[in-house]
Length: 561
Image (cartoon, rainbow, N blue to C red):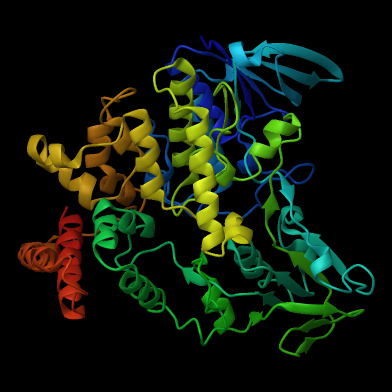
């Protein structure tokens, strides 16, 4: 029987891991090498990997909260690192987590006990202030994240080390734009960090160039109607539509939607043909490009003493600084080699959590995922599953079946030509959350909710799929989940309504009519859809009919409140 659990890291993953252990009656000991909680989100000037000073979350507060601890209603929808760290402290204090953390303690090794095949136990060696300790634990949760080591591919850029006389650095070293004032800066990589850094540096630099190998789609945090975008799009209704319509049609609709903000081809950002959908969140990048503060360039072919030569033959002279926004690699050097090899990627782990070859499932890796939604929410659900497995409540299939399932997914990646790009693949947020929730026994039954609680069912199906949905039923059920879901739009609007405006007449005359007219349209279109499913492609006008009806009803219902 598992009792004692070693947890590596006290970031967001480690905190929810401690709480999940306590919920299952386990005894957690968390080892954190720094002197505080927060992990990546605790800003520091130097010394370890952390976010940069101006970073803002890409996921809204309702979509990224811990499932039984929503953000305070006056918190902004998208937060700075300081506000998010404040939330972590509230969470830790509320559930009394700090007493289970040993700060300034580094985990040096995690190795199987000689009798592991029968006990499943691990020997954990730690170091605190130069003093080494060893202890035996019944289980281990690895919560050190996947932003462990900067990926600096100097070998891919001839001349950067041998000829280039300017400076170069990785984005993890970037904290603020002060050092780039008046300089000509080249940013390599157009991920979320690359886009943010290019925008911020452009305010003080003489010129910023943004180099991208394959391009990306850029979306805003704000939806068409002013609500957080992820709250509007991450719904079970949208997931249902994606399942009903052919993927090719849904893909074209998504790309058309991305281009409604600005034409990505005109801005040099449109992605080249790729099986992976490249997407970043940035509210200011298009404006910076339009103003000439940021110039988009193709991939770099080589560097000279002071210039960058691009693959299209163009050259930019007098480059002072090169910023590598080329991402991170993860590693678990403290794990013994056989286990470390099984944890080399999320696709070598069973459901991105458990190493399949272990005789006893007493080690789990949390947070080694890339989702189309909140990683924090996904990690918490992983922790709930892992601790229930440790407890013996949800036993895993036999080891052979785990190995076979992992091998099947890897073969599928090879068949799709994605084996070398697996680190860039994002799994469906809703699909993954429901998959893990089914393992835990906490996936909401929407059809049953429509029969027993129609008001709640409407929000669960048509509203955002927030983490609180996974506290409505099953083990760990939270009494406050229903009210939290029903008041989620109030909390989203609360920090915005800082100036009282009387617009009741406009709402009654416009938005209530949208609600009244939109619902019949939605119903009729739904009947047409049901009649046509399985009989070929759905005509475009019917798709638009249904989508328009839903949007009218949904937006009207929200803005009338």
